[in-house]
Amino acid sequence: MRIIRWLSITASVAGGLALLAALAAAQTFPVKPIRIVTTESASTGDLSARVFTPPMAASLGQNIIIDNRGLTAGELVARAAPDGYTLVYYGAPLWLLQFLRDKVPYNLQRDFAPISLTVSSPLILVVHPSLPVASVRELITFAKSRPGELNSGSGLSGGAPHLACALFKSMTSLDIVHISYKGSAQSLTALIGNEVQIAFPAAGALAPHVKSGRLKALAVSSAQPSELAPGLPTITASGLPGYEATSLYGMFAPAGTPAGVMFRLNQEVVKSLNRADSKEKLLRAGVEVVASTPQQLVTTLKAEMSRMGKVIKEAGIRD
Image 1 (tube, rainbow, N blue to C red):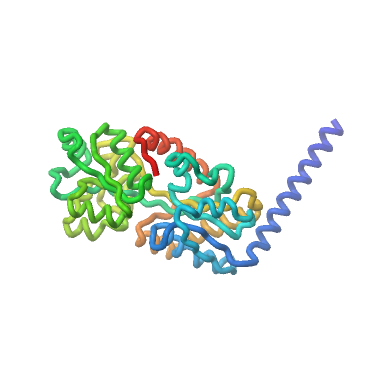
Image 2: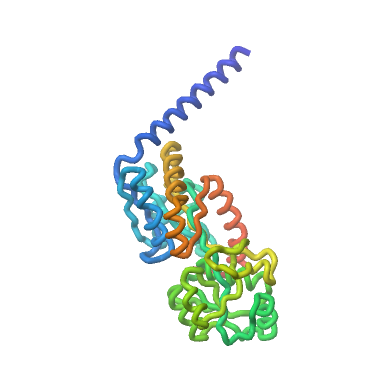
């Protein structure tokens, strides 16, 4: 009994010392600028990072440098020192690249420590106005009557708009030809020009084209109606129950970053995202604030990898 009691006391002391060490690390961090490695310049990741990091930097008392590296961001941060001074802020390609390529220079679970989900952006199912459809249900019926005649378009192969369309095709068994373009702007131009008839672009880029009548918006891809698409029903509610596809972004540190530093980073990211002015600016940029715990980020990504990994494999999508 004395041995058990001694072990219990020792464990308690060790736990207390670990907590004190974590708190000490949180209090002294940071002592130099933080670098956040993210997506290409002017992309959603870049623009949203430049909204919520300035108040975060002010709170931390250090500059935050936005480093636009594109798909090399994951590899760069996976190899960085685990001290909290180099972070990666990215969307689905970071965790789905493993399903799109045979070799990826990092392992999400092994090489990264989760900080927080940050923002999400619903995608909008839009069609060329020449299509005689006014709802998701009508689009499915129309497409089934014309197998192989309709085209869908997206930018990056394996990106959120591409996967949203692949999921749509998988759930409806529709024969729609997919065409990849160099970027989202090119795919949107192709849709307006009727080179493709269906697409799932992000909400932020669509408003002027829908208002002018150059495009017809049918539904939003998120599970719930979105402020970014006022008045639009969800795809689930308008003809395809169970459908959900959103563009998510998350913040990570290299694995092994001290617990106290991780705790401080999560606090600062969530606090900055939840500021009223940040939410307003991000909404104008076409994204909605999520702001989560590290565990919520892990849980969400496990579900996304399971669901979308299956879609990628079945559709034979490669990057």
